[in-house]
Image 1 (cartoon, rainbow, N blue to C red):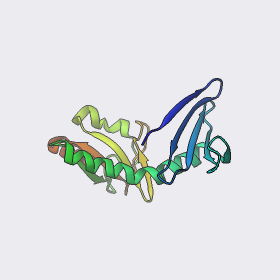
Image 2 (image 1 turned 45 degrees about the vertical axis):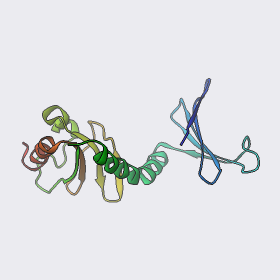
Image 3 (image 1 turned 90 degrees about the vertical axis):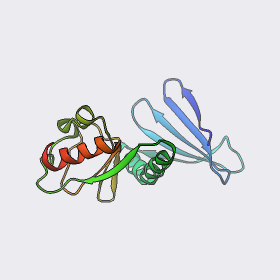
Amino acid sequence: MEIEQTSLPGIGLKHEFTTHSGRRVAVVSHRSGRRDLIIYDRSDPDRACEAIQLNDEEADALVELLGAPRIVQRLNALHSEIEGLVSIQLPVLPGSPYDGRTLGDARIRTRTGASVVAVVRGPQVNASPTPDFRFSAGDVVVVVGDDETTRAVADILTDGG
């Protein structure tokens, strides 16, 4: 899929693409942080027939709804392409030394070389969590690395490693 990026001076960036069915869709990312989802008229691709303003929470929700299945698909594709790459899902159990603590506290990448690519909390997927992301019992941590590094992450989340 081809995504066109256009700089909008004084406003921000616009990313546009055409769906398989021929509809033009754009996301305008304003410098202020606001995002607009634009759907273009089928008969006139230069005329927006719908523009929806999204606040941060709404944009995050949309990303999570659309992104979670794609993360899994991309990880599965990587497995077939890169020998030795492993992705595992590790639960944060009640009593874990990291229940209530941040990803930064765990220092997973520094200590193991593995990467936390997402944390699933109920129906919500937190893709690419930042160091200030706080783990909770019941979270499922998606980790990518090799056999050794992902086992080390399991040890950290279970007993502090």
